[in-house]
Image (cartoon, helix red, strand yellow):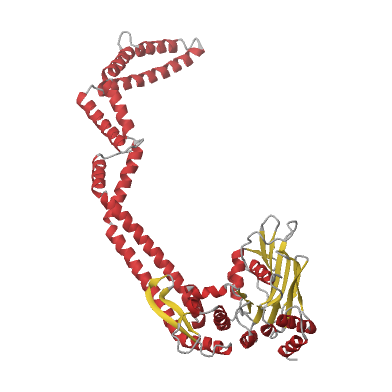
Length: 546
């Protein structure tokens, strides 16, 4: 439960601290005093976005801090999931800087706003003045029945299953669309693959062909150059090699008379060996290279084919053309395997749909089983709050499988005997809506076992004996949980264990707990207005049981 709330520099609040009772806490005050600002501060604390109007004094931080007693609520596993250190008493703090930056803490541990939201769902249920509108919401009605029927785990499982079904359908649709598009180009694709495959593309072939063509195109000049070289090296009369051999012998002959001649002879022999090797190469070139017009045409035709294929497929290089061929080939293979892939994806969709349908059916059965007791419970509370002939029924309609399951739920209501129940959001008055919402919230809150519920003028539109009955229902609810009720009704205010007054002083919202005597005066003021009469004081004492 919420044990203490501290608000500093928020909206019209300069500084406020309040401690709450574990049962029914009443908050009253004149319209415009700032009662609902407290809800804004609490919402901020529990992860609501800062809309920019939070800070009162732009020169300092806005700080909202609350202490909670969570002993016995079995939240240890939740804290572990949220990666927060668990303590039976925790402090949650939200800080908004003048620059608009937000920081949040659980204890001394910094946390994300999403963590505050997840934690807040287990700590407080805030029913604002506009919450009656959610009676028209399909998600609220389904959520209410999930809670009453104990189907929240089933709902989580269904949400996951339906999400998986959606993903499986998307994957199937993508595959079908891709295959349909590919089928349109299949004939073209097969032709391109066949043409490229018949070309027997080989990496580096262009460079090889260009080199061979260059050689064949200049065969005569190449063989002539190497032939002349061969003759210059080996001619019996004028050949360089023979002359150098003779010179090497002459140097060796004088080596005994001149030591350096031996070295010169050896060096010359090395040159002779190199020239002999060069001569062998020249001889091979002359024998190997021969002008061959047919072979030259063959190479030119092959190179032109490669160039033509590159131009056709806009490939910058032969390597890129090979990549294009591989891609086309892979697309054909995918087409060839398409039927098998589609079949597997269709099977996956069927499997996911079957699982989702099983869970949706289980939820529907749980809802149907819980509905009679839920209807009876709501009617019982409505009878207590002055609607003796009220009827509340739940209408189930079967629909195709969708994000919420296979059912559409309507809350049907009639206030008077003999009238056919109709959707509550279409026929109920403001006061009737408030009382139905009170009944729903009372039952749902007990099922959720939430430690705290906050009502912001849930009693709008009722008065007199009905207001007293509403107060009794709220008081009964507070016997099992903490209730904080913002009200304008003295009959409801008189039921509280503690009574707080919100008032405005010099454009600043303040709040304080009333003493017994101050409480009498406040309820008398609520009964008669500013001119408090003795009769109003007497009536206030009666309401307070004095």
